Image (tube, rainbow, N blue to C red; front, side, top):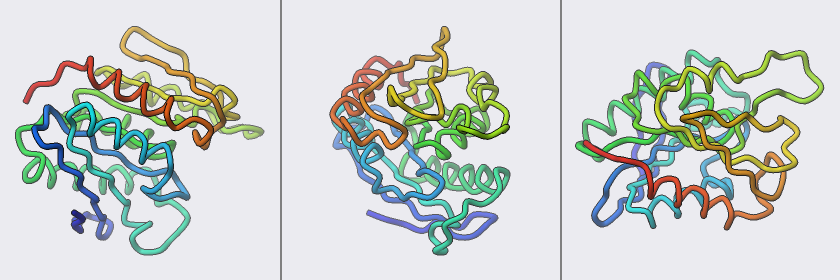
Length: 201
C-alpha cells in the first residue's frame, strides 16, 4: 500500500508493508540520489518483516517531485518528522518505532531520532567522511543518538567505517557504499539486531 503525506516541503510518499502481528515498526528513508528500491533497503525491509516489524519506506518530497539533488538538511528533517507523525497517528499507532535509512536517510534518522520518539536507529552505509573532500566528519550525528543504533557498513566503503560504541553496533559486510555485494548479509544483520531490540508501545 502506498500513500502520499503532505509535509511542510511538499508531498512525501510512503510504501507500507504490514506485518501480520507486528511487534514494532521500521520506517526507512532512501539515499541522496537513489530511491526506496535500493537493494539494501529492500533486503532490510524483508528482514524486518521476518522479525515481525511493519515496514514503511519513505520517499522524500524532492524525489516525489522528480528532483535528483536532495533538499537542505532542515527540509529533509522537517518532512521526515511530518511523515512519522502521520504514520504514528494512523497505520503505525501503538507500535514501537525504529527509524532508519540508507546513507543520507540514515543521517536524517539520526538527527531526528529524539524528536520522532524512536526506540532504535538503523543506518545502512552511513556516510561518515566523504572521500577526497574537506567536509567534517558526520560522527557527531551518530553521537547525538541516545537509543540503540545498528550500522551496516561495507568493508570497502570509501566513506569509512563508523566506530562502535556502547549503544552503537557496527556490522561489517562484503562490499562498498552500495551494499550490493551481499544483500543476504545485510538482511541477516538487520534481522538479528531487530530480533534482540526491546520494543514497547
